[in-house]
Length: 432
Picture 1 (cartoon, rainbow, N blue to C red):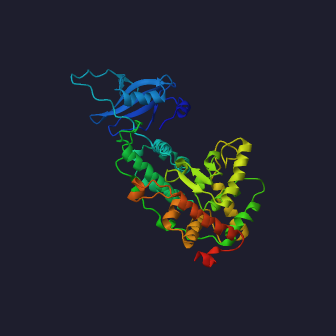
Picture 2 (picture 1 turned 60 degrees about the horizontal axis):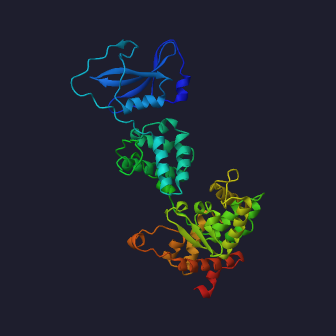
Picture 3 (picture 1 turned 45 degrees about the horizontal axis):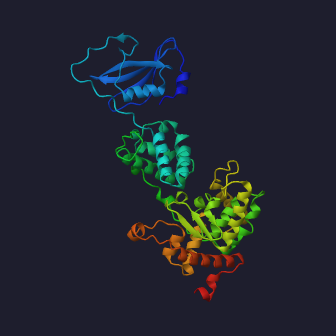
């Protein structure tokens, strides 16, 4: 598609030439910019009538902007003088006695517009993943494939999707390719439904008849579930050797420690915490639904270790005059990147030859340890804020299970205290 900046670069080459806006419809309508000999730039609309191409001039640039030209094409009937395509104006045909034809249908949205609108939809629905979606699609589609980004969404087929994924696979990308595929599938699924949704405010048309991503298989061998559980030495290292990996006072270490102290709450939720979310006197974290994967508020009881970490973080945030507990180094109004703690753990793993644990293993470790110490799966799932899909939980059960979650956190706090001392209470008969 044309842009205003591109149009400025089109020069006089001594003869007429055309540049298409590439907004063709199934009806054969296309917006054309004709650069005349001498440099004059005219907007023309090309149509197909009786198997022949017909052109009508609708204005000149810059008097008529690109946006106005597009509006003139798909919002109103085409008016203007008709020419043959070689610059010679022909008399307009006499008006028929029948009703005039309807205006051409609205232009269809591009892939980029679809990705941006779906990102806004995620944001409006309070999904914390909307930023992750934006970064993924811009980094893996917009920058390496600007032609696909400008392509109409309805023109995308399985081969286009395959081209994008195959390119990143050739660069050595593995599991992230499956994440990209999942995001693209979700966006096109949105396009299939959104156009006919009576509650949708946007007037963009997509014209998508099937989801092209569905025809491209998921790479199953890159979806192996993790099995690693942290050792006592791994857990102790978070408080002993991990802080020594940073040369200055940064917040990545307390973020990793808080993830462990809260029994593996999601890093993307913790990094969004603000001072009002922390209730030290009540011993609770009140996570808003906007930071949760399930989109629902989540209350987390605090262990002794989490209380100590949060007390320091709240004090430092108030001293900085900001509400963010984990602000970005250069943008205090935003939270830090979630890749920073993962990178820190990776450097620690390489430097200290640990068992090979990663950030995502913290949650698995808590699930496993709490299960071995007698906490039921239902309470473990509620402790981690999982969406409960049974009918009772979805429609009727509004009990917060705060008492049960507090008891589970006491169990985790006891195990963590022992682990930091090198003892495993799972070996004690008291927990048998």
